[in-house]
Amino acid sequence: MLFIDSQARFAIAVAPQIFPFTFGDEPINSGEAISATCSILKGDFPMDIAWAFNGEPISVESTDQFSITKSKRLSVLSIDAVAARHAGEYTCTASNKAGASSHTAALAVNGNIARMCSRVSIYATTFRLFFLRRAKTKPSFSPHLLQSLHQYS
Image (cartoon, rainbow, N blue to C red; front, side, top):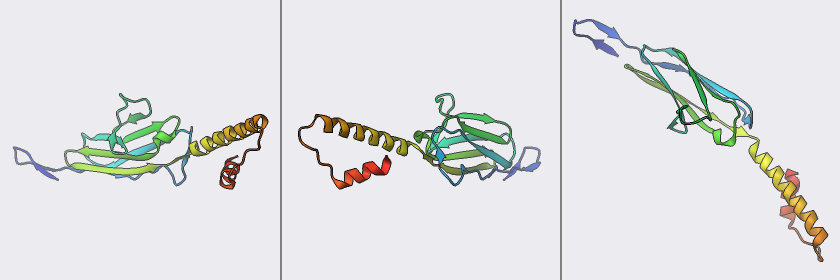
C-alpha cells in the first residue's frame, strides 16, 4: 500500500504475512500441553496480533483456558491441559495500517470418548453383576448391547 504525507513524501507500507502453523497431524491426547506459534514474517509496525477460537476472539482477561505471550513478531497461544472443549479451529490474525493476514489451524483432541466408554462399560458390568445376584430370573441382553460393552471393556 502506498501512502503520501503532507510534504509529498511517500512510503510503501507492508501488510503482515504469517508463517503457517499447525497442531500436528495426529489428535492431541486429553491432559497434554499444547502451543501454537504465530510468526509474522513481514509487515510494518505498529502491528496487532490476535487469536480467535472457532471464530470468537480469545481474551485471556476473561478466561483461564488459554495463555498468550507476545513479542514484536511472535504470539504464542498455550493450553496447559487440553480437554475436549479445546477442540476446534484456532485463528491468528495480524493487522497493521496496510492490511491484515490470518492463518487457521484445527486442533483435534482424543481420549475423552474412550475414557467415557470405559466408565460406561464398568458401570454396565457392575450393574449386570448386581442384577444377576438380586434377580430371580436371568436377565437377557441383546447381542448388540453385549458386543458394544465388550468393545470398550
